[in-house]
Amino acid sequence: MLVACDASQLEWRTILELSRDEVGLAEVLEGQDTHTLNQHAFSLPSRLIAKIYLFRTIFRGSGYAFANDPAFMHVSSSPKFWDGIGEKFYAKYAGIDAKHTEWKDLVVSGRPIFGPSGRHWDISLGRDRNGELKIPWTVLTNYPVQGTGADVMMLARISFAKRLKDARIPALLVATVHDSIVVDVEKCYVSQIAKIFYEVFDDLIENIWRCFKYEWVCPLACEVKCGMDMLNMEKVERPA
Image (tube, rainbow, N blue to C red; front, top):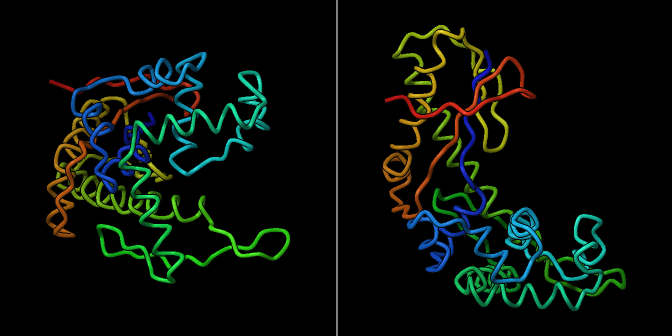
């Protein structure tokens, strides 16, 4: 059986952590459905559209890009419409907007962006088609989030591997991709593997402090699924 552990909303929770955005953090801490809230707040036609919109907008997607994307054109093909949604998004999550501006100022001044683990990113200004300097918004908003998320998952993998070894479960760690860890194991061990995964994420914030001396505040969580192949997976609830 394959058992897959996916970090819940890793990119979203990482930018909330890095920006300490009060509204977004409150939604996570209170267990609210951010995507449904945003669907209504931004007058979007579905929760799915709101969800996809959020995960692109945290990397500063432009109104023009949304207006020319087949996944969004049925909502509106007007860049002005999507720029208006973006204004509402960053007004609601003002902490994210402020963090993006802080990172932009660092890039413009030629200084690196530092993450919680000590990892840093030296990002150069880009150039437009006319050769003029431009701010590389997508890159400067993406690298700190993806890089920090990778550090979080690195700790999760190490913690899981150690617990797996201590439990002496005959399992094979077959893949770690982005926010997912996949294990191949006999069916009789699925519940034990799931329990270990959930415990890994219970301790993840403490392990971030132990390794990096950084006080992470945004909750981290995971979802565990199992199945005979990756196309046919069912959720595994947390064992009692």
